[in-house]
Length: 582
Picture (tube, helix red, strand yellow):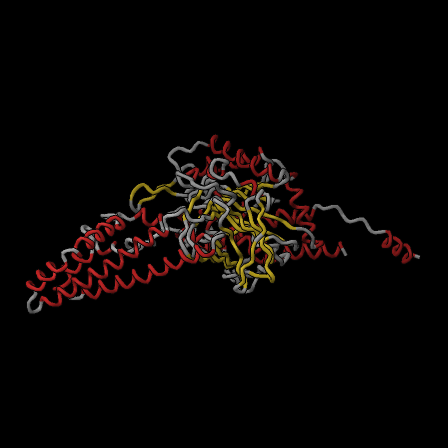
């Protein structure tokens, strides 16, 4: 049966890979039309994995694939790491789609995922993320990294009692692919006074804390593909109190804004109402409890605003003035009465209403500031991974917009290796380099030295990992508005990748050459495969690249299969053979 299984495995890969690149156009299983007759600038003969130092280092990876393909045993872990090309997860998502859905037809888990929406950046295109509450973000490309980062190079932290996030793993899949029961969330509380919980069917499931790896392990009572995490303070009463204050402040803020809109509708009362309703020098656009459109807990948002005055301080002054005014209320009333006549009555009423609203808002703001003056529990998280014992392929994409090789070093990502150990990749696909090369003068020696450092980090986790380098795509540089020029470093960077592959006994997928070499990005843009910035591809371009890489990888694996030694017949088969001869 093993021999039959091997033949079936070969045929399955051969058919699926051939179908992708047949001409005339053929619709792939995902419904994307591949038509190479339109792309004469692509050199499809170069769509191969090249091995400058041979394939010996790929044997452990190929053998794990053999066990999975022929015996349905084991798990194959793949890591695809890069910058914006990979954060978007279109090219890597396409490769994952082929590997997981076409053969062997089962996923062993989605790999690392993250609520990128909470960090105010784009979520990978292969899943969805949602969040509630206020979160601060830290990532490896920032000049100042405030949190220790891990494998994904990004972290979010919160002290908001309302904080939650949701990951929808099958949001864009026509049929469910991911259904797991065990998950590990990497994160920590600053003072051990807040913990994450997995919410399933409105029930909080507490995780088991693993202090050695700064993570929490959760077990769902049933397989799920939507991960909903909330955060519970050890002082639940205080959490509820602060959350209610925030809810109340939102309501009062909306009432105040609506009241101001009503007052402003009257042109006569407009200027008077604004003058009396607001502290001096405070504009209406930033007058509320949230200073414009910012939540009072959203420090990042508040820092971006430029309020003319400190609202809390202004409110304290306003309340002091109001208290002083109480002692001379009679005199103020008499003065107001003597000044009212005819149509001015509405203006005076508006002033009183505005003063009353302002006092109510300021009272609430001062009370809220006192409630929030203590150090609130804070939780920081760096990623989530599903853990499964099922055989299959786990394909994790790691990418941050603008990332360079050094952004994954110890200085910025000290938890990189600790988290990578839970993936322990059998194959690493390197797609970092486009940002390193997009400079005036490209230093290929530093580029290679930086890759040496990153590779050493990965080898400490898995010494047998196989590596494939993607050469950079061709790109242009913007010299002024709407004017781009060819970036001449493409060939220099390409040679650096081949030197790295030779040194580390890795494979190379020569994307730069197969897409057409220097200047080819303009042709990809003209063919509606690339964006106007002439650095990034559009959805169709990324899908095409993903299809091509998948074919190159499967071709390399098929060649391995073709060179496998013939299986020795079992003793039983030998006996049957002798009997048949008699």
